Amino acid sequence: HGSMSHEKVVEVLRECVDDLRLVIDSLEPVGHDLVSLLATMRYRLGKRLQMGGLKLEWDVQDLPPLPWLEPPDALHVLRLMQEALNNVLKHANASRVRMVTRHHGSYVEIRVEDDGAGFDLQTIQHGRGLKSQIKRDQRLGGKLRIDSTSGMGTRLSLRLPVERKAPG
Image (cartoon, rainbow, N blue to C red; front, side, top):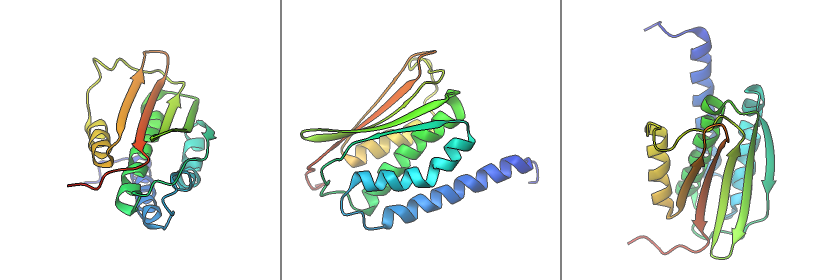
């Protein structure tokens, strides 16, 4: 309708391009390798995080292959992490964001931690982003947990099973 500022249009277009790249990346054969998938996302979003004043700390350890990690699920993982990073960029007022992976026997964990403003989980509005993250987590058979305290930053943790039973 012509009511959006030039800066806002550029931002929306940038987000669309990032989203399209994520979809394309999720279709690349990653050989069930979650670390490769995350590294691609880091490459794609790194400049945007930097432009937003965020220092990305990469604490990613090797993970076992996830036999079930095929393109549809890879896209869910990427979108979940993209949403987490976008939330840090837009809402956290953080200077640092840390991406962490760990292997804990029967599951792997991906964490996004920031040093931002944090929020009270009890009073926060559950917007579309959080609802879609919860839905994606359920599709992946994972466990999503968000810990945040006002003034102390936020930590999003996604635990995914190494082996997953076939649906149905």
